[in-house]
Image (cartoon, rainbow, N blue to C red; front, side):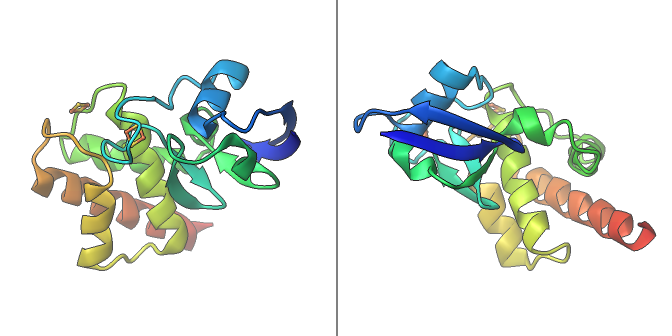
Length: 159
Ligand code: FES
Ligand code: FES
């Protein structure tokens, strides 16, 4: 089945097989290395992508479900000016992440900031829980997300 979708702002087209998972399609055919296939079971969060602005586990969805969607991964997000809100938010909160978790954390935070720059405690908690890793303390992750939100709010008011 030939599908087309937007990948990091570019229109792309590809022939897919029914057994293809979105994560494998992105990694194998589009060299998207920031998306990882680890648990394969919606548990770790390392395969997260943004689909029409919402985080989804690409290890779970068939590749053909990307059809007509707007897909963002770290490769595209990191070229956006507003990405610096997240980089600074996490840096000033002293959160250090490995290369597997960092893209997923950034995408989940970006998804939240696209919904609201004044997230509730519950929304921040939900975003923090989307990626499973015990390397940073939860309060630091929550703080990092909130700092990112403040920076994004400031950016919106300035522009
Ligand atoms: S690989 Fe998809 S959640 Fe772990
Ligand atoms: S920061 Fe990646 S496993 Fe903890």
